[in-house]
Length: 171
Image 1 (cartoon, rainbow, N blue to C red):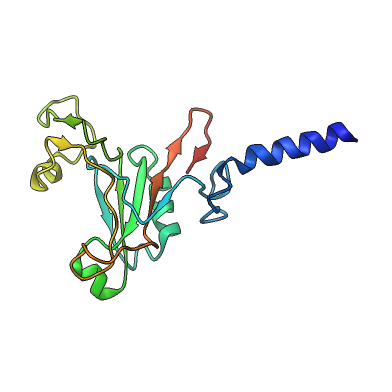
Image 2 (tube, rainbow, N blue to C red):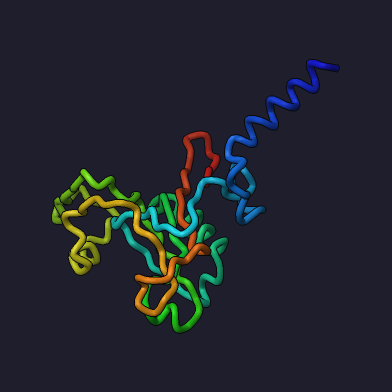
């Protein structure tokens, strides 16, 4: 009986590795039946393959994550935040999906946007947004004021969506 209890405790401890994080979006078809790998109040996303989704297509953070899950071939992370003064005025956060994360401050990557090897990188959008080269920086904070730069938004959420080789998904 002690061995069974020990096994149960060890399994609970393994599951509780992210005990500081509540499971969000319970019921999503992921390894954890929801997401436990995320950050609140910050935008960990990068700039490649940007897909912007708005209300009413995406109503909450769970819809945002589901949109990333539907695009497993091009989406590796998401952010649910106010991204423009118009989104703040409407009261509806936007969902932005990306294939890469924010680069560390000491890293700069320049893409050969005209290369025939590129697939699904939204080169025109990268150029239009001035994101080539992609310059690393500290992970930016999310805000909820009209200027998107003063009042922190603790309800913004961003994080990874990893499609694993075994067919499962983690987020």
